[in-house]
Picture (cartoon, rainbow, N blue to C red):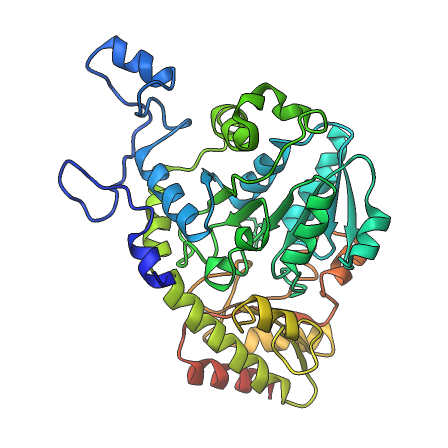
Length: 406
Ligand SMILES: *Cc1c(COP(=O)(O)O)cnc(C)c1O
């Protein structure tokens, strides 16, 4: 099946009662049972069913099943936000004293989360060089994961998933990929060897920017060494699935970051048109990047532009696409503000992945809490404008940006 067919038909949970074509919103906290014996079996995992929405809900389960199908995973757990997906997805298997190798120029919120990890004695080693030679230098006995974004937001650095996965597996550690900016339409990291895939589904998956949400998808393939990952030891009997079983039955349920059924429903609607939107957004972004880059006085960072260091990898790994984000180097903070304030169609907002084109000056907003080094590593400088391209007609976008720049 092609992506668009899969988005509509794969992982579907059939409604036996009325034949509803998508799973309705089960906006309830708890589920009633006809007798105590049945509820006892549900609690013990001996019967399928739902007891309490923090632990499971049919609408949320339907979203999990469908995004899992698109990402070619073994199982997925939906969370209250992308940040909940990253924090839960990592802390489920890490212990105090562990180290993570992470790509420099991550999403600002993730960098902030990682600074909080210090409180639990989990250290982060940032790098923008994922060659095996450099990774070998950075790797330590206590390194327990590699974390990277498929297309860095907003550094727009594309990482070679297959190559990093090969290194991680040689060391017996999992590769965790934040695939928010690429989406499974551009790449399914699990097929390239990633073990855990994370999304802020608030962005492209949802599409219309109407529900904060996240999801952790697990490959089901990683061979856990339980002496090196003692957090999962209690779940040893589940062997390669111990990560997923602990996440669902214990960690995520106990940390409490569950997704609201209504938000899951909105994400299901979004997911069905993901392919169409991503194709249009990527086509728009490429044309906008090429056209704006020709204008004197500004320069554009976009993976597919000629001379961009990410071009070859994007073409090979992302089906020839470059993503929906571009940044514009305007020359000064004043010029950046003037450009942003002169736009008529694009909306000034901190989000990405909306159907609408959004713009922001990241230096003093998204990177307010980051150091200058962290900001520059993310490709953000005093004159940078970030654009999250939408599905508007390209002629209108070009006209809007041209009048704002000239
Ligand atoms: C937005 C975003 C997040 C955080 O997701 P929320 O849903 O806002 O919590 C994480 N990673 C990336 C790449 C993002 O763009």
